Length: 139
Image 1: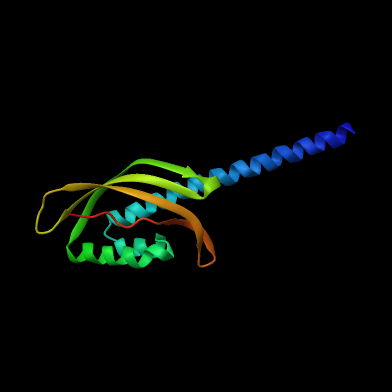
Image 2 (image 1 turned 90 degrees about the horizontal axis):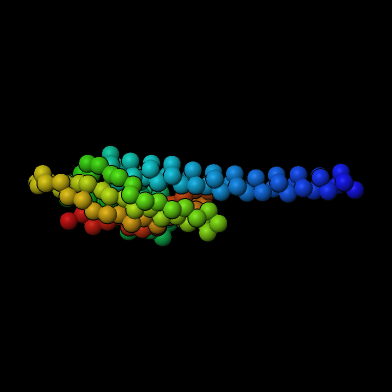
C-alpha cells in the first residue's frame, strides 16, 4: 500500500513538472518569436514579418500597412522591448516595443510605441505565436 502511494505521488509530481515545462517552453517560444518579429521590422522586412507572424484575420491589413511604409521609405533604425507578458494558460501574450525610425526625405529620427498583442495558434499545421495587432502609424 505504501509503495502504491509513493508511486501515485511520483506520478503527480511528474505531471506537475510536465505542465511547468510546457508553460516555460511557451514563454521561451514567445520571447524568441517576438524578438524575431521585431528584428524583421528592424531590418526592413515588414512584409516577411507579416507573412510569417500575422494572424490570418490580420494579414491583409498588416500587409497593406507594410506596403505603405515601404512606399513612404520608412526605415526602422532600432527597437527596444520595454515590457512583455506571456500567459500560457490563456494562450496570449503582450509586448510593448519602442521603434525608432525615419521616413525619407527627412533624416530626423522619430519614435513610436508599438503595443503588440499575440496569440498562440496554428498556422499550416504548426503551433506558433502570431501577432494580432496592426503595425503602428509611422508619421
